[in-house]
Length: 307
Image (cartoon, rainbow, N blue to C red; front, side):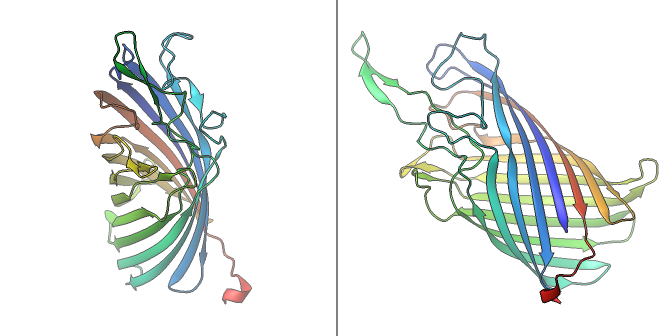
């Protein structure tokens, strides 16, 4: 099976003064594609390889040339910077799944999976939290930060991935519901000294039968994500912990040639923590919307040596 997931995420973000004398507000827009190929190795095992491709762009609502600081500027992950390797490629993922339980056309299905996230070169090459200390005119110490960026397409760390998925097929009008959970655990620091956080992901899905007037099935989604503490050079990164809950809905169309098309609208809500790993703990406001389009195609092809 081949698939292509395309997503656009809009974050309208504002935070208070972090010692510069004024608040900041801006937009973080992400345009991400994730092509994937799943190969059935047997009746019980399948293997998936995927790769993130895209850009993230920060657009600050500032007057050009004013309020420019080492922390804030208009920028994107496709552009070079002093502490970033630019690019459009994110992590690659290799996943092996095993079908533990399968009741057939109706009933339960249970999958367990494990895999590896492989980082790309588009990552931070130096901690954005480094600074020098100087004395001001009043003899007080001040932190002087070099210009830096806080985000990239990849975190730069190899990560172990574990997942568990349970699905139940029913009779109409609700024909399907499922829950899944996954964990991403960093194996080691990046060569630049960054250790990504442990991440947990829980999600639930409910799917109805086809609704005639839109010729599509309705999907309802709820997702919870938790991120633990990240580290730079052995030191915990401020404000790196956080949790997000994301409700949403979408529509799924299927064609006679085994092509599936899904259009989803999601609304991430910050429960705890902060959007970005900035150097203090200001008040923040966040409004977010995510649009995603997924296309899946099942191929009638058997790899000769897997028969």
